[in-house]
Image (cartoon, rainbow, N blue to C red; front, top):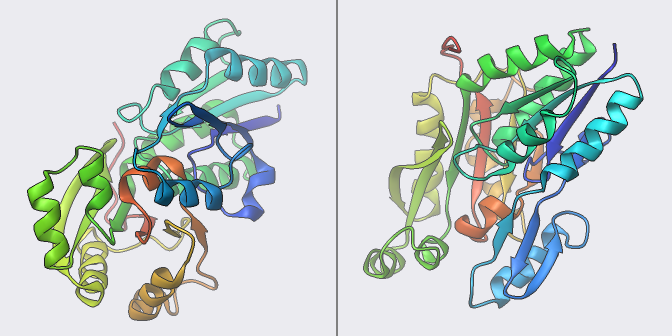
Length: 287
């Protein structure tokens, strides 16, 4: 039976991958203004408004009915469904997808919590495509994704602490001191939670710290998808990082894929962040 792959709009993937998925969008709110993520607001326009606005935007998960509509179309077409959402600890999207699945026959819809976000979800989604191409059914794909998500590592270098401060994630005093010292935090997403890994002074030290964190994670499993991303309107900082970290990728990848990171991570990271998502080489068994 044919398998339909469904993701929400926070999963950052390359343009060439988008046609392989049905995408259910979240909503983005700037005060009273509401936009449909990726439909009525582009990533570029989102960052323009983020820079212009004094108030951080918020996001709303899709309704169960938005997912149910996709499920109905798939089931009517004789397809099984695998849904991959951003971390349930960061959004109610996973819950909406599950509520919608209750009304469909058992075994027709499988909902997977990625336990990550943005390009982290993106590489799991890309892996799902490979598994489908290998001929796995929906149940088998979902089981593999739940196992492989334990090996996903998403590490990011932020350009500023300002947006973490505005979102109430750090104190104003820490943000002010960080600005004076040009401190750039390195963070990761583990088990659906954002964690601080370290702080660097300046971009060069930050790039070096990002490289070190990738190595300390056990290195990269180059047999699986790798994706780099950036927030904001320019990929200039990402290009510099790729240049500084060439030893990580050279000889291991024919092509290094990159993409612009969307609204959920962009809201709290702010413009100028760079990130790497990969499957760690030191494999751990899923539970």
